[in-house]
Length: 263
Image: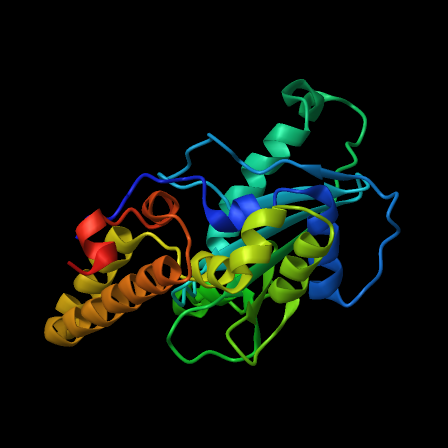
């Protein structure tokens, strides 16, 4: 089985590449309403490699908010740290480098951070991750515990079936407003299913293998790899059976023809 390790234009990012859809997604996540005339400016770190990654979605709302949304198919307790690194890069895009030397205070959009989780492991409907939870204990140095001078808070939503429905609302919005109309009308559920299972398989395997070596459970992790491999293949074959062109499935999953056809 071949997996495309370098495929960067994810279905998730493509689906939410329209300002109107992003407005709808933000409103669904926050439970608020925004006026249609409030401008949405996308500033995702496309083509900007950072630790061999790019962030999934980043956009400004009316120049007052900058929102970062990441999609994860595995549980990652380090998302607050990752998003800290991403937001620094996003601010570099927003702000003129010379402005930071100005004698006048710079006004910057307030950040908000979200992670949408759709993996196979059990996870709460909603969880809050804090950067400060990763800080080392200063009390070991004989110092009193103090409030962190740097904090970043991420809201993680479990968007599996029966969980939070923000993503599905945004997909419906796309379909009803002729955004990616053809694939969503014909295969809306499969597009949703595939975007939710998209992840970097090789990176994840390497991390799990190393963790397994440390814990002495490599064999158990290998079983987990096989289970995830099989689920990805099942999704691809289901999409083929429902009429999605095989070349599209190849592009999205990176699988070869034999794997998709099951021959």
